[in-house]
Image (tube, rainbow over all chains, first blue to last red; front, side, top):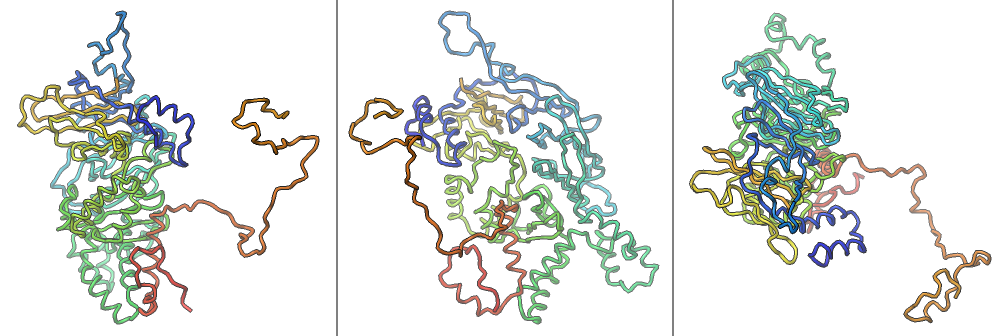
Length: 534
Length: 99
């Protein structure tokens, strides 16, 4: 885009040339090739907190105390210092090389009390009103007594509390508590925030709770999808005699013996004779899909026997694992078997998973695919960005590189596709669906069209990675393909012991050339480096 | 020349020698060329309102595929004409409606 790589020449060129339509952000980002966090302060002395992430608008740095009971919020700022000497050597004085030069503590709030702990991996930010959602919970019980509608085999947590905080001053605005439930609280997996709608998946009771975060700071229940789909389903069923528990029903002379015996045999549905609302929608959709595949009635029935009735119990036993919003009305729900493991999605081969697109307004299932479906993979390849729905109020989050918006990421995907067996490749790619929200950093230094870097060592996704002693290089994608900056974790001279396993995590500011790299080992304190542009 | 640009230096003073700047006291009688349609086949309906589709392209695709699957299947012979040499996924697989 620019003819020269010199920043002054680029500024002059920017004065006279307008960017191509719709690319103003991309052209502005080109300047990040010139302003890079090339200077590192090694092993900064900082408070003993676990730093979680920068908020997407760059206003706050969220951290938790070591005992996971307090929240500490910092504001990132740029260091400034003054020199008394006449010719100041442009090196930072020692007193400026501190954590406090870069971050000001705003407040500390105690979120968890007694036996509760803050879930470190769970944090959601609502950019439009600067609200943060945090979760505290008590310890999980793995041998939970099954009760009523609870799915057996899933642990139970006594109390899970969702806190809505206004990050400007740390005030708790609202709370939502779940009792004797289980929500997957690692890495935002059991929740999804889109705009002002928050989806929480209760695995134990197989319900998707949709809450709305209002500007006034209230968490309002919108709907609960699971046993019931529409708001008045419960009222309708309760007023209908057939929905009585089995023990009552046996007193009536119903001819529903088959249903009763089946319910008795299946411990999941001892108290209900009806399947849950979402399951009914799913089964009827699968039925109609198979019915419409054939035009001849005899073939239809044969097809149904083979594909539907033979697997009927497997379909009934499917449970909701994970959910994401596709837009305000549509959810992408991942179904799987209980044995599949709620936390690990790696063994996709043994345990089939299914994806359903559900319309919350019409309460209909729109589409249903197995995790090996090529059609779904085709949509994933062409429209990956639409699987990360972004609210319009969010400026920075709309430009994160993916294989749908970046040619280099797409080339990478194509390279993997060529080398792999197609069915395995499809399962692996679809295994990342539904996506977790707010798990990628919007920093322009991760933009694949600006820099090339080793994705195994560092990437936009905030996960812990294997740490190396070698610095991670960021090389420009365009001419002259030079190394622009390096991120080195750990102490400057490298750690003395190269055999202990080290993991590192990176926190990049959304738009400033500022990053934190945290290297942790099992035995010693984490070592934090600050990378910034001097 | 009496223009508002004055006597600025130019590459070739004979450029723009035929140019007569428009004078408000003596309006030009030339009207610019206009084009009128000769038929009314492409006129939009009078109550047409153009808005952005609320559903994004991904969801539209889900609905379209679902509609295709849910439509009762027709005889196989009707599909033979469009299968030839079609390697790219077509935007729409539907042919004309049943006669």
